Length: 181
Image (cartoon, rainbow, N blue to C red; front, top):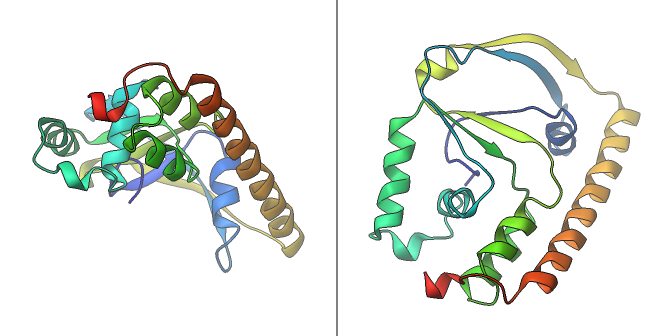
């Protein structure tokens, strides 16, 4: 249930994945090189299509499986080697629930999901794309580094939650809601 569905995820800001892996036993951070030459890449801008594609891949649109929008998103997943776009962190579930209930519109959804700006992600969805990934280095963390990353992760999540709540309050009546789409 990741932003762009199944695949191998990479990001352009090392802080984001480090704060995710710090909760796993014996975390390892990899630095990669990814050659996009010859790959079919979809690069989402931060807009309603991006937000709804994330919602689709995270299972938030399962009630609408037969809709033209869901058919389009399934087709997208099958036509590209790499899907790229802004990272939406896990606070998005609360925001998406509010959106699907018709309580906020698209502007609030998009801005709240991207409020924290935690970087862009690249999801290699095909074997061809995965074959073009090269591991340059790996880094294991000490106990003190893990503790620091956990603290940073908590602070980042709180900041994101606060920012999303403020955006939803400020923009709640703007734009079309999901029920109007």
